Amino acid sequence: MGALVTGGALVLGEVIEKGLMAIPAFAIEIPLLGSLANIVGLFLGTVVSGVIGAIVMYLIDKLIEKKMLRENDKAQIDKGNEVLCTQYKLQILNEVKFENTKTNTLENISSRHREAAKIMKESLSNIMEDFVGDFSDKENKIIIDEEDIKTNEKIDKASKDLDDLLKSWN
Image 1 (tube, rainbow, N blue to C red):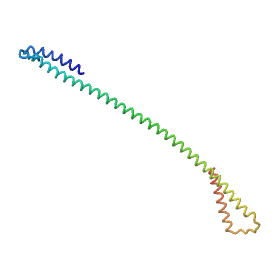
Image 2 (cartoon, rainbow, N blue to C red; image 1 turned 120 degrees about the vertical axis):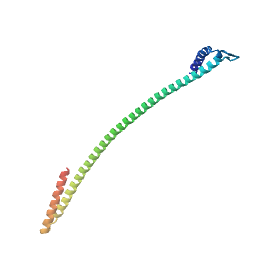
Image 3 (cartoon, rainbow, N blue to C red; image 1 turned 60 degrees about the horizontal axis):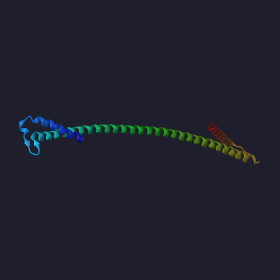
């Protein structure tokens, strides 16, 4: 860039010098420096060339800045899309994990209910065997009154309800 400004200053200085040589006051020779037209032409050529070079450098800088801003915006958009994609994958993974946990929990609860029903059924049969066994072994005289009949009806009703409950769990 410096070579272009220097070259432009020399060429423009020569052009201005040739134009000023037509004016008699600028044709005066100054010892060791050259003519007044040469000095003014070189000075004006350098100033104009420098200003043009500065403007060009400013415009190039603006173009580079705009390009970098576009690239930065594109990179931010790409990164945002990548984050959204990762979030979507995580959401799907969490939904699958939730479904697996839900299925395992339901299977576990069902298994425990089946086991509890089995234990209750065994306990009821043990209770009934013990109850029947206690009275069948005794040879005592059994006296049944109205209170015993009501108690037996309540026991029969409770036994029937327990049987129905066990059947509903199976």
